[in-house]
Length: 335
Figure 1 (cartoon, rainbow, N blue to C red):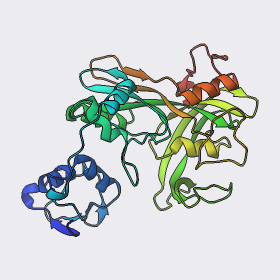
Figure 2: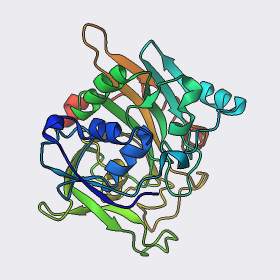
Figure 3: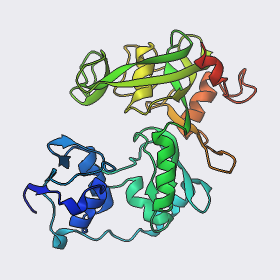
């Protein structure tokens, strides 16, 4: 393992993307590892965090964290037949460039501390060169988009970054949000979980509402609508995030007084509605992706088992929903 290095960018490399420059210097480091170094702020430009697509300039100093030597890099073990079968069963859409998965509850999209089995690590089961386009939380189920090659990853990724990709989520909330529909927006930043509700995750990192100008504050905006209610015990909510902040929907529902049922971090002092399993009831239901010269790509994922059972228990399935959960988002946006 090497120590921390400070490398100065040569004029010949000026204009290069940071991630591509890094790969030229350290070709033995896997792409996923490079993304993690950037995401966690270990790879820095002139002492500041930077994204992989940042253009570097001659004379800038790049902080290189400790890296394994080429001989220390373990080759990935071949994907076993059970994992291949597992991944193929998740496929709900496929064309020449993209694959849509229905990610199950409880499996991480990417690796981390103590996380060795994750979707990213199992992508070779779907073909060489497959890569993630976006992410979902470990306990959020639903549509997850995979690119089959770098070209597809680039154009699909741009659709997410520019907010042209429309994501619709379904959730069951503990209680009824007030108001029942509309727009919620504000600033959010990383904080720490307290022990107000006897939470065993006390001290874990969470997102919290903050004032504009607070350290790390990022603007977040969500449209939402109540599709059906079980009295004041629970509600079926459909949500469209207009920004892509970490835990955005989970925090916004808590701020509306009705957190997602089974959420271990964004909680309420109300008990879980009777008959519901103690799992996060949040599902990425639909992804709409614009394509040049073609019809929009629309991928829908059916509910996971625990949410299907919750819909039946609460009497939500088909109740006053002629288009099965569809709402007029333009009307909601207009207030």
